[in-house]
Amino acid sequence: MAAAVSALFLAGLQGADAQVPCDPAKCVHPACVCPSITPPKGMDPQKAPQFVTLTFDDAVQKTLVDVTSSLMASHRNPNGCPIPSTWFVQTLYSDYALVQQWYAAGNEVADHTMTHVGSPPVDEVAGNRKAINAFSGIPYSKMTGFRAPFLNYTKGTFDILGQEKIEYDSSTTADTTTAFWPYTLDNGLANDCWNGICQAGVVQPGMWEIPMHAIMDDSTPPIAHNMDVHLEIKDTAKLNQLLRDNFNEHYTKNRAPFGIYLHPVHVGTSNDTYNSFFTEILKNQDVWFVTNQQLLQWMKNPVPATELANQDYMKCTRPAVGKEICNGLDDTKSGTIDTGVLEVCNFAAGPWSTCYGCPKTAPSPADPVPERVVVAGTPGARTAVPVTCAMEWWDPVAAQCLCTSSNCTFTDTAIKPTASGTPGAKPTGSGDKGSAAGTLRVDGAWVTLGLAASIAAGLVQML
Ligand SMILES: *[C@@H]1O[C@H](CO)[C@@H](O)[C@H](O)[C@H]1NC(C)=O
Ligand SMILES: *[C@@H]1O[C@H](CO)[C@@H](O)[C@H](O)[C@H]1NC(C)=O
Ligand SMILES: *[C@@H]1O[C@H](CO)[C@@H](O)[C@H](O)[C@H]1NC(C)=O
Ligand SMILES: [Zn+2]
Image (cartoon, rainbow, N blue to C red; front, top):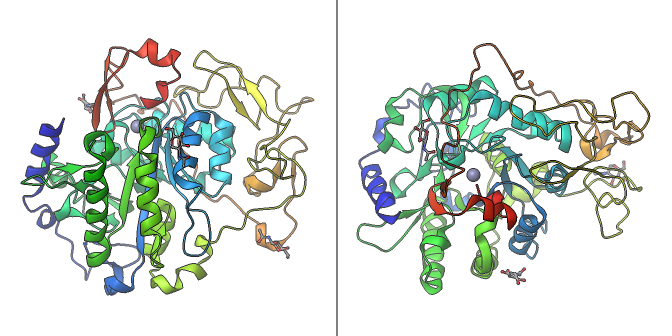
């Protein structure tokens, strides 16, 4: 694996930057942003916040949410808010109620396809958001990001993202020479040029690319490590040093966002390593953990680190509805979320819960929102969140929006995903061929596992 990464890295060193001409006179902020290693609008890097994006991938399950808590719960941003994170969710093997709770806690949910397929067909991308909207209540306008499973994408993937009005992709990787701030795809991709994608005309005006910034090691030449770095750098002392050195490379220079990209299933005892690192960097008052959506909000309206605490999108006030409704929050501070109001749905891939009514069949790309067991409009049916109410304020049992003040009004104005079975939207991707066999590629790292044994052990979420 290291050899493959190394070869890619060496190819990537050959001047990716210059491969995407971008004329700053024509590409005007904030609608268009050129790939750049320096902050937007000429901001002095030492005045910019040092953003840290912690991301998680794949299915959302109780044991995995616990892993994320073990990495996040003890840390606070400079404004005292809990550190947020982005989860690239696959719906297969996920618990929809936990997806809702993750979002309700102030984190971001992004699209990682329904069943985790590389270079996915449109129904995998669209169906994911439809199923999460229906069974987790998350509005479309809050699910705006995408990461390709296995980080495997093509130009066609970006065409699908454009069609689906996805706001940003975060599937490309960056080494030292391509450690760009987020940029728009008005002129094409400027990362992963080694695979020819920079010449492929991946032009999606206004769509953002958030490159995944690698941890460079101390080999000669350095090898780029992208996801689950601890799996490749097993010497803890060395990993500690590399995390700090790489962070300082960002912090003391151009302050391009620094990323930690994890599969919760792989974290294991490395939570201690990451925790001590997070504690250390958060001692700096200009270091902020952000979701990818928060990062883009800053990119569109960059403010110095000293003003970040005043931005609405960095605040962490949670709604207080005063009684237990099914909204992903512990409304009555009882210690458990949505006590007694969740429905448990049993399917072959495992049981999951929802506030919005069990479907008759498991959601799938062909039918992401199957008819409910209790049909809408009949007694006992749950009512979907209307576009005019924020999920946190919606009581799906009483079919009532509890927001009565102007500070909680919300309208989901997002353009909906395309219908499944759209003519011409036949699957074109590779699918997960071979995934029933023993060897699978987990977002950039090959792992071997027995699928049946993994399912028995509850580890299928690692796919
Ligand atoms: C880190 O993970 C281990 C299990 O691998 C767990 O026992 C420990 O409590 C975790 N640490 C924190 C701070 O949650
Ligand atoms: C909304 O405003 C009310 C007063 O108008 C205040 O009590 C409440 O805390 C606010 N809620 C949020 C979520 O900001
Ligand atoms: C990535 O996608 C391409 C094109 O669909 C396919 O040929 C290839 O096998 C995929 N690779 C992985 C690792 O999924
Ligand atoms: Zn994945």
